[in-house]
Image (tube, rainbow, N blue to C red; front, side, top):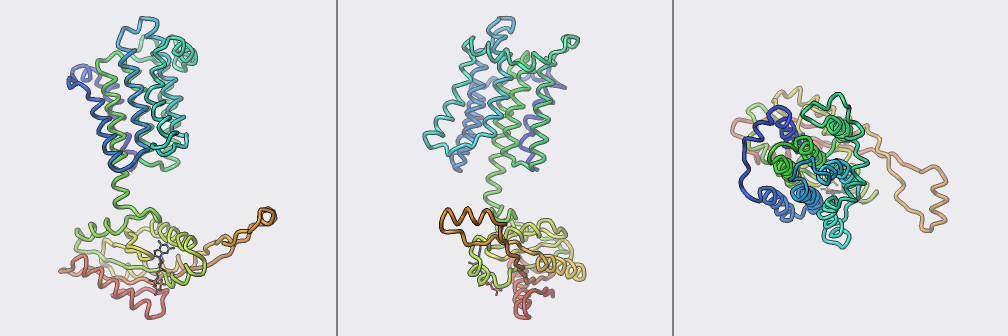
Length: 398
Ligand SMILES: Nc1nc2c(ncn2[C@@H]2O[C@H](COP(=O)(O)OP(=O)(O)OP(=O)(O)O)[C@@H](O)[C@H]2O)c(=O)[nH]1
């Protein structure tokens, strides 16, 4: 789903491919459209203190400014054509570097330096010697196949864009990347597509707008996650649950679930190991299927079922309970050696690990016609209490 941040770039690429005449016919006459779009991303990112977005805004802004200053004349001029050949190299190298660079917080010396460099370094391409060197590396030039020269697109550039874009997108899919990571790919793609569509009026403006829209969508996704997703387990949290419970279908059921003796567990193995248990539980619930899981708070989770078949409900909950109870959780020895020498000795030996098991109790109830969010949660909680009272590590449904 995080792929949606790339949609503006994809739409822009499809428009260039299928309806280039449409691009020529629509005039973006409002002055400063791109500055306004990047300004919105800046403002929203600053408001929510999402500094990482600033680097990509600077990257888009710097390249857009360079294009405006250097590429608005006929490509036949030598300096302009050198800049045109140098741009794909610059775009690709800097985008990859920025993706993999460990970025500091913006408001530090290093952060500000990187930000300023991203915004201003592309302007160095306007100096003929720099553009000349990069133009020599131009992969598009190397890949240009003479027979295809008649095409309206620069074929070498197209092959380069598809190849690099494809490898990058496969990597993002493989990594189940965030919307933010997709927005980087999208910003790069938007600007590469601009180079392919350089002959069309206002292509650079459309490209920068598509890149900004991708960044803004990724920012919206981040905001939703901050508001609705629990960081520790990756499950939706209480706010999302309450909104789901407001629109519960007629046939549904709710279950409250709680880790048994979690306080003792925390006291014995430490809070970090406790967190490990909660993360594991989150993963089991997410992967189990048959319900939607939420972290209610602390060591309590809520499951929402979209049916009210009690038999099916009991079987599912029993399956979750036994999966958790039988999961051997491997713990690293918590005690760290006091001295470096001891540490080395310890690392030389095989790392000791200990296996522990945790159990959960579950209380569920099916929806009644006049139930509210609070009343159904209260009944599920009472059933959870019964399961605890009956000895824990069990399911109570009624
Ligand atoms: N590690 C960790 N512990 C948490 C977190 N949230 C809540 N806890 C701990 O969960 C424990 C809950 O303890 P209790 O409510 O007494 O429940 P319990 O010990 O599980 O006992 P029963 O529910 O009766 O089986 C407390 O010690 C909290 O500090 C968290 O995010 N991480």
